[in-house]
Amino acid sequence: MDAQQIAEKVRDLVVGSIRDEFKEFKAEVRGQLEGFRVALDTMNKRLDGLERRMDSLERRMDSLDAKIDAVREELSARIDAVREELTARIDETNRRIDSVREELTARIDETNKRIDLLSTRLEENTRELGELKAEIVALRSRQEIIEDLVRRVRKLEDKVFA
Image (cartoon, rainbow, N blue to C red; front, top):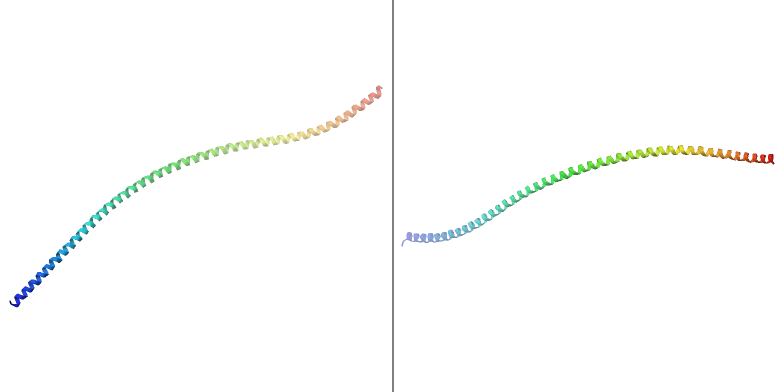
């Protein structure tokens, strides 16, 4: 056997061994690639699930936003209605207060006029009472004088007719 044949045999053996190793490596890489593909498929499925959940959450959030907006609008309308009602009530109460105040002012003014009139009449009556007292004092003095004169006249009559 010659060197060339030996070299070919060694080469065939080495190439065969390399082929076998390469086949094993290829099978191993295929297995790993298959594992990666399975892992990627699993991750893709999980990502798809997450995307579906995100879409569902976004729809729910949009729905909640719409509900919040509707409730906000309803509450704003209610608040406006209550505000208008309260404003009307306050205005009516203010009108009533003004009416009562005007009525009480008129009554107080009338009462003050009556008090002034009564005060004037009381002053007049007091003045007249003072005048009457002075007249009574004068009349009593005259009466005493008259009584004294009547006594004297009786004494004189008694003396003259006796």
